[in-house]
Image (cartoon, rainbow, N blue to C red; front, side, top):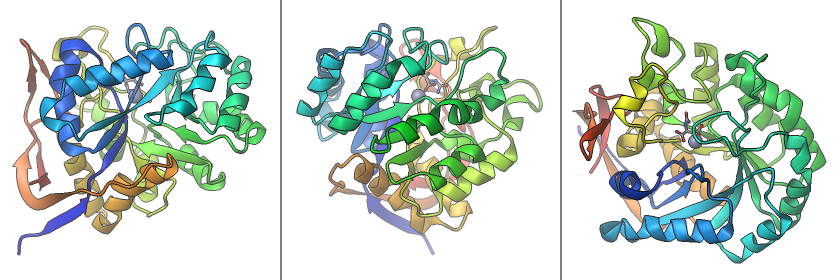
Length: 344
Ligand code: NCD
Ligand code: ZN
């Protein structure tokens, strides 16, 4: 018997759309699957002011004539110079839902990030007061710290202290990759949540290295060992509302990934909800998909749950080998692989 599944239209609480022509080519994929998406501000130069965020929002909307139900949610990029006056403007704009912290130099377009997080407690104090969420790229960048330990060390050195100092500050630990993170989230208050990507649910670090180096599986935080992936699978499929969907889908052209210095990031937007469905079904937890994908993120951000729905059918299909953008291609997550759920 054919299996179908109807769920409330999901939201993506962490996506990279970039700008200009590249944004115009990728945003329809996100808008087709999701009602809303929280768009990361790591453009070049980054989105650091309310005005820039509002202008970026309108560029995204105007790239999308045929999906105008889609609502981008915006965030400002925290820098060493972000002023308290800028933060004070945020509550007037309901589409700006938080501030994104990147440690300087941690990942793609993060040069303007914060050099020393302890120096921005003034901002966190104000955000707590105004109830503006803090979205964390939770890694340290100290070259002395092993790349596989950077998330855990961030929790130990910084996050525990921030949460303790600002207990009412809403915090999202983005794209978590470790059991250390699931443990931290589970042991902290309701003010703290986490997003989980499809790649960190589907892949472990072997997928990057075994049989030859695979640049299309390189993202940050880097894929971890299998025990960590198992912790993420349990967290995502547990029905615990502190874990919700954020793809971290990031469009990088094939030529920049298949490169002597390949860049970090994985594109999953074109088949994101199907990939999550695949994961949840394999865990016999397809009934937990809707909470994770469509409810918990909206609830955490104090947004209304979506009223529309999408239908999925259990039917084998193959993720495209590539997605053409201009004369170039993006290689999507699970390119050329068979998966068993699709949106109808
Ligand atoms: C992201 C990107 O490409 O913008 N890359 C990634 O590896 N995840 C940035 C980020 O979220 O780290
Ligand atoms: Zn990201």
